[in-house]
Length: 234
Image (tube, rainbow, N blue to C red):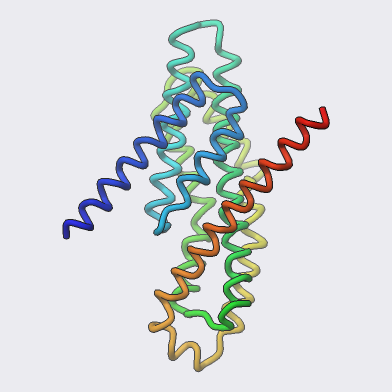
């Protein structure tokens, strides 16, 4: 019980720290989209990622972005354009991070299949459910944040909602590939594996999380290298 309480406290502290870091990035930072994407992916490297954890991460990012923009507007009334840009970049950074998470999940499933040739059907069903809800969760959190914001920040967030509804999201586009890969994995699960599904559930879940965490780190390192190379070329 004490460990559970400690884990809950650690998780709450991590979410509070994430919201604070996003706030500072929007209120004072530069290259907000990249900063938000990096901070979000960093938060996703937790031992256990489920729908509730992802929702808390999204909410913290959007709340931090909203409050950071509000602070910017309070300090300087002529910063309206900058505040709009910072909020837009923050939401795009979150969308990009979620797309990277979906990509990492796809690659993790492919890698796990290569390692084990086995999957728990129970875990695959749960993974599909979590992934299918990812874009909806993003949109719902964005709408909720817009509804609690005021003034220019609220207008900007509502505009982002309408833009996403018309044009789609980065995470939604990536999920098409990820869910197609997941469907292939589920189709390949044989009857024997289905019988062993319950026993495989925890092992499969841990393997996918471990591989996904490594892949997310690799994606971050790869993008950082590409960014440094572009700066060097300039």
